[in-house]
Amino acid sequence: MIEATNNISPKPDGPMQTETNPDDNIIQQVEQTGEKIARAREAVGKVIFGQDPVIDQVLITLLCGGHALLVGVPGLAKTKLVETLGIVLGLDTSRIQFTPDLMPSDILGSEVLEESDSGKRSFRFIRGPIFSQLLMADEINRASPRTQAALLQAMQENHVTIAGERHDLPRPFHVLATQNPLEQEGTYPLPEAQLDRFMMQVDVPYPDMESERRMLLETTDVDEYHPSAVLDGDDLIASQRLIRRIPVGESVVQAILNLVRAARPGEGDEEFTRWISWGPGPRASQALMLGVRARALIDGRLAPSVDDVIALAEPVLQHRMALTFAARAEGKTNLGLISQLAAKLG
Image (tube, rainbow, N blue to C red; front, side, top):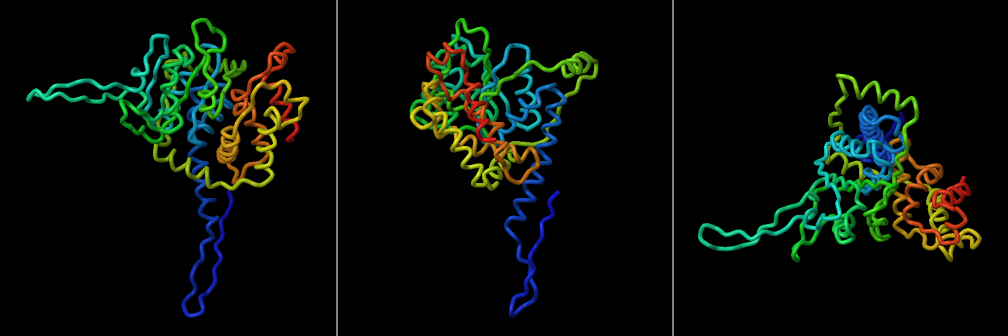
């Protein structure tokens, strides 16, 4: 706990008054918000076993106001994680199962022609499932590119345009999409423009043995744990505003710039970037700048460090890079190259 102190000084012509240090207020807010987030992490951890790094990365994404792409094989509780987060964070949640025959109107909504009792006809807009605070896009790569593109405007601008009319989305608004990395038959790879809209690509691994043992015992028992709301939408919005007020040291800012720019062809070391077809843009730098602040907050720290940049390098950069054919032929991977870059920051 960090104790805030006030500087007390008398005015020349009046009684003594208290001058409040503006830093004291943000310290108190960070501590209070950190306690709420810690309770939320604990509640989610009672449902999702052995995935603490995944939970943290998704929470960081939501605290930054971003969207996440969860990649993992079936059966690793990706859907359960999104449902649990919706409950714990007190968000209005909807789920869309993406299929090849899904249409944009199935996501956004559509206009229907109605006739009144007097015979007057008019169009009425019926909102689709995208009008929710937390949208789960299950197996997003199974829908056609046209349907995938229906999310682009919403994810970037927090509104959609239907028949020339603007419709604002609820606040907060987040998309958590899932993707199976194994079965690619009948799928449509996400275009680079859409991948860049996701703040993080969160890889969901298999749980360790102890976590799976706990899962077997607790999820097959009669009294299964059911989470309850710890936060609400207003709390999340307030946390997102607080994140932007947390100071970032110059060393951390420079580490972000060094990392992102080193992964771009023509800017980084030529011996390294010759393996990269295209690299991350400024949106990656912005994601890291917000992400390191959120990671510091959920860890109970008042300022981020270079270690936070290293920890978030892979989930922020891996979907924003593409390797050359020669790199793939040599067996190189995005994660491997990012690890090399991050190691230089340590």
